[in-house]
Length: 118
Image (tube, rainbow, N blue to C red; front, side):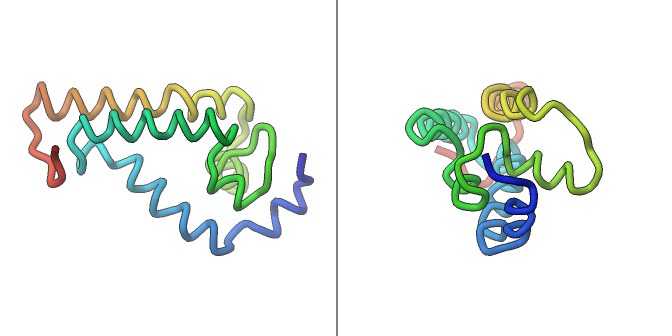
């Protein structure tokens, strides 16, 4: 596992600037992409976790670490405290489902028209 000072060296490098817009896009995807595309994205994300044992961008940014996620590093930096393992499990398995449920709710039940659809 990497030491905190090693993680600190990579805080705002090139991988951060590649990762950040993708995180923003993923979290707002229910307003942008058709829920079918989000389902494909969730499945692709889970396949990535299965194959690489984590997020390839987080691995590129911080190395192969046990419970570090993009979110934990930056949220801890601004003062949030939480159980890294539980938070990682939430972000890996439940958060994508929440985004998918939001997409279905807004697009199917509230008839939200999204700019990018199947």
